[in-house]
Amino acid sequence: MATSLGSNTYNRQNWEDSDFPILCQTCLGENPYIRMTKEKYGKECKICARPFTVFRWCPGVRMRFKKTEVCQTCSKMKNVCQTCLLDLEYGLPIQVRDTGLSIKDDVPKSDVNKEYYTQNMEREIQNSDGTRPVGLLGKAPSSSDMLLKLARTTPYYKRNRPHICSFWVKGECKRGEECPYRHEKPTDPDDPLADQNIKDRYYGINDPVADKLLKRASAMPRLDPPEDKTITTLYIGGLGENVTDSELRNHFYQFGEIRTITLVQRQQCAFIQFATRPAAELAAEKSFNKLIVNGRRLTVKWGRSQAAKGKEPKDGYSEMGTRLEPVPGLPAALPPPPVLEEESTANYFNLDPSSSPAVLNLSLPPPPGLPNPPPPGFGPPMFHPMGPPPPPPMGLRPPGHIHYPSQDPQRMGAHAATRHGD
Image 1 (tube, rainbow, N blue to C red):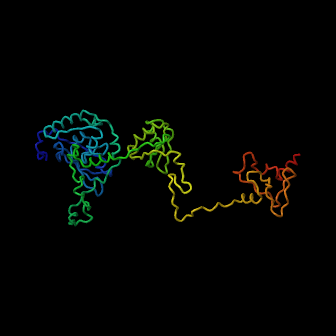
Image 2 (cartoon, rainbow, N blue to C red):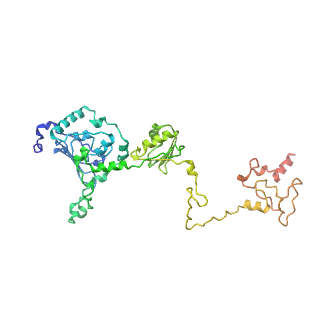
Image 3 (cartoon, rainbow, N blue to C red):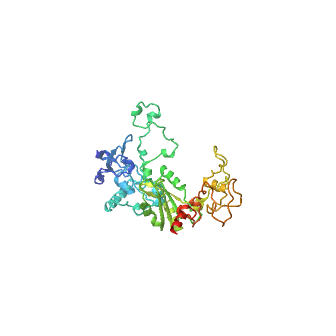
């Protein structure tokens, strides 16, 4: 098999023989137990044209079989997956990653220069510890704001679906549900995403997926700070059930002093209040569309001021001054509240609710059939034959008044106790 792979037989010592491929989580699939076939020197690399070990596997149920397309040397030079050629760290095309990191790694395209460049990079890979990329990518900054915004946080298994059945498009497929291909309408041929090339993706040129992501990055919304300078609280949404208070504190403490962290498990959100406004602005700028905790991208917004929370619609008008339309099925005005028993008794005896229950108001004559009460200061107070009116509720009594019936000097028990003591 090796002799039929072209003119690279003289450089057979540089052919790749590996035990496991370099793949992203999406290409591996969601099943942790997969079966791979290994073919030693099975195909030539589509970039450097050197024979390499080809792996083939099925990433899941009703998914198409996938195989490695480039060798591991080309994969390590660009830090990409051997199958989809997307960046292993961000899951983005090489053109988007290089634009975000402001690097331009020009790989030679001629056969002689490409082979010489590949051998030098392979020597550098062997001398490195294997934890960081090589070349210009290894010297680039570790992260970028644009890449953190565009990075995919979860695997996109939909990319592993079978291809569209060409016989079904022509109306000639007779397999029905047993057909391993998709019976769907194909992509519009005028769509730029329909024309993708594996070499253009590797070299970072003319990649329609990268162009789409770069346009999305330029149109991303921004989080402007509110005009109210007293707001120092950030709203964090989409926490899920596993995000804890300490994980949020470990991320936000780097921006400034944190005053309080309020975690609302029912709504799966949190409110983080900073001690100063500059710290809150720095945290909002560094975390908006970039905050990822436990594999979840969290929502970051500014909190509302207390003055805005206290505004409520009054007299049929909203806080903006516009008139509120009546709700169908509800009365225009609510009926008056029912009169409590204490209030009706006080109105019957013309009592002042704020005064003692034994003092009568003499501004109006008593009801017919009752004796005229003496003026205040003359003799004991007169009571109704049916008993004294009930005392006002505890909430309406002024401070300093009695609270227990046994402390009332006008009751029989109190007088009896005084006489017995005398």
